[in-house]
Length: 288
Image: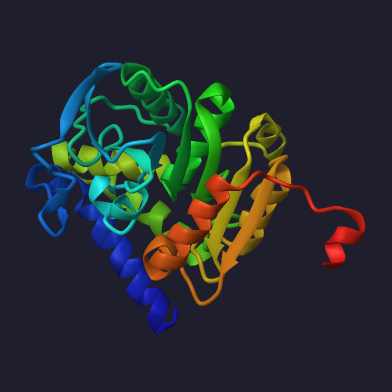
């Protein structure tokens, strides 16, 4: 294992092992006077599908839902919220069992989280919206578009995968996740360990989305990944090829955090994608 992979795996390990601790300490991200992820001025809870979902809303205009990844929270989008809130009503939520959305039940699936987001949109009287999803949030975004197609106008996803194995995820990292999950099963199952195990189980056994099912994604979709992403670029390409109306964007010299590493470019390209009509380039136009 090279040094960069060791650093990556240590970072992922830290993220996962701290996820339940984070729910009690509530780390936040701030930009100026605004504290994203723990903003008492706008933060609210919605009683949804058996748990209380924490959410924040910024800006005005057409609705835009932004979805975080495994063990993440609203705070992860400090680079996107100010930019998109200038032109959109930006809706962000801590997913079930993550951030401030505490859920003590044993089960957790991406389908559950997609349906949770649909319920939140219903509660906020949002009939359709633009969607950005990062990592697990990208999986949630795909499932939201498949299970509730009327809700998604356009979808931008980065670092999403369709199934959990080494054809989709960087092999050494996936094997480490499986090993860590097995190790946690052998220790005393405290509430903190159970919370960590639930998030690891999600990555080890889910998602399970056949590429053929992506035909159900009817909205224009921008599929994004880094050329050194932990989600293998060939898998990201397979997603783009399976979605009927898709664009593919692979960022050079980038890992999983495309919207951090290339935050300004990411915001501009995704913003332009939302504004411009989708077009399929065919025939001689492909030479342009």
